[in-house]
Length: 148
Length: 157
Image (cartoon, each protein chain N blue to C red):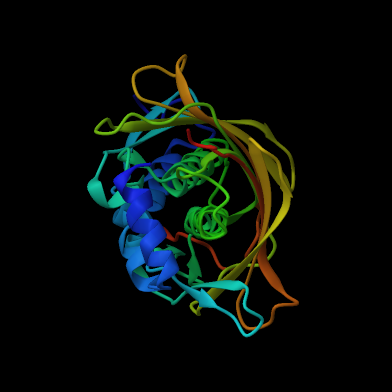
């Protein structure tokens, strides 16, 4: 197991969410936060930062940034659930943009739809004020490593 | 590289510069290298703060998503007769192999169908040659997505 995964495991066991984000450089650059929601499931959030804007006239969050936030949420969701010995490798990622991401906090939730020995399928949903009005929905496949 | 083959060279030049100047693209350090035919190329240098897996130093997939989205949008601009606002409808990325830590990533995109309301694009990300890709992306864009133009030449940022 890599040193990163050993550190990750320890931070997870102690629920040191902010330090988990700090250990993934691009997640830290985006400004991602996460924790357990009221139902005990992981809830990811991204407070609004001007550096994440992709349309200055609306203004709206950058579509690629929304993708990165969702992909990162799926990755951490899998790692949090001890689904892989090393960081899962993304195989493909498909994203539907439903509404523009406004200058507000963006939230995301993940659901592992299928967990095989080698591959996991994850659904991800992002919203802002109203969960019934998603900003984007995505799905991803990840390769897992069983380790030695 | 030039803009001569674009549907409207002035629109492509302005939109190409606009798209890489957007705050998130500046954050990532995207550079617009130019367009051959109607295929634009962007570059992002490897940086420590763009890494997704600290154990390997491989760039986060989200950076690939952003450069595919942005380069694909520029490829739509290469087919625009006049300024218009576009919005990504959907995007799919196949991660063909891990990016090499320390190396710049290039993305070249093509709008292969410009329909009246929808634009269809495909893109590849690579280090040295598009024939040896890291990732492949397809996307669709809604044309005329907002009556408020993304760019008016007089108030360009």
